[in-house]
Length: 264
Image (cartoon, rainbow, N blue to C red):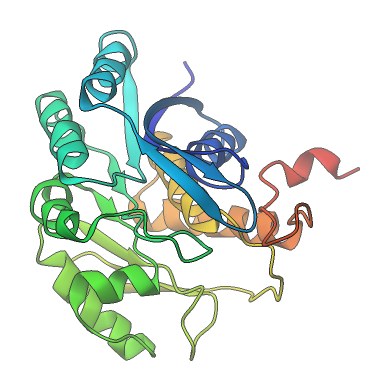
């Protein structure tokens, strides 16, 4: 039986990030992907031009439809832009006792547009993080969450400890933007740190990498891997997806989720 994994996130009309990236990444990593859409963005490789949050009633209805029918092995959350949306998702997830929840605290688009309202940051920390097996902020998001400026791995360690105190089991600070250690990720489980050094690929075409990484991790956790092993498998996949990224559109092109289909 194929493992079934749910993403709860916003739609990217350009197909490079959000729900679209999640579905591609999960499928590419061997699971059946399902979705609950929280918002619709008008977006391409250059910018987000408009955002429409969906009513919480339809978000709740989507969640009910999934959990009433499928055996959900893992859940990944992405863009949850408002306090009301976060509270709705938490209310529906709690009774399901989801063990494998990966929270990607999406705050800002690649082009700089805010995707999480400032007043919702406390809500996501206090209500959603305690349910999470893993939280996966990038450097910018980790700075916002921890209040610590991150320019080195030592800073990332301090930030990870602060974020862990919000109640999540594990914190992964994605280091794609870490000035001193490019492409180095840091995992903290409350006791120990795992360092994942990777190859830095110098390309502007990295649209959707955060969504893709978190979704691939969720897929591997659903398939039975430990968090450290799932992170390693997802990082290996993401590196190749970036290496084969697509120079399409006029801005930052997307990663190539199915790069392996064009190999020989």
